Length: 155
Image 1 (cartoon, rainbow, N blue to C red):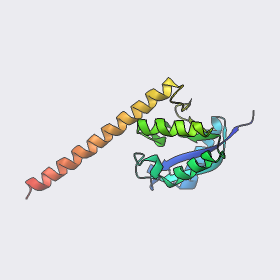
Image 2 (spheres, helix red, strand yellow):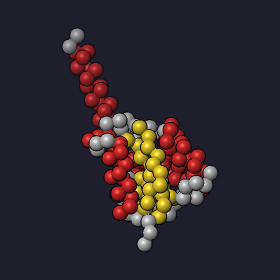
Image 3 (spheres, rainbow, N blue to C red):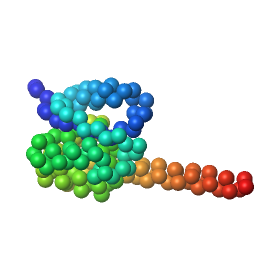
Image 4 (cartoon, rainbow, N blue to C red):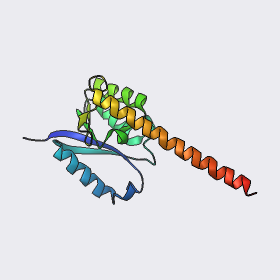
């Protein structure tokens, strides 16, 4: 059976969090996609310090969206729901927009098509991703407040 043609979207930090070079990362992602039945024909990669950066503010994502709107993309592969977006409202809006353009989104690690209207598994995954993002933000805010309080008390 021949693999389906797809593009791969990912948002990586500048350091790739120990993943090595960008080329090595792309190769590993393409291998994962191929083991899920997809042949990657193009990579859309955004350099992000956080996946909480809104999708519409990401350069590669915007290019991918324009290509989908032009009918050039039928299938998008992402590593997992977290790498696409941790904001459930944004995820719903974007996946519906892509669906209107005829582009489907598949998450490798969750082994699921991202279809917010017809896939209850994805709705649960997206909700968990947003909850985790909120927890991380809260921890960061508490740590920053604690550092500020410590600096003020040492004066």
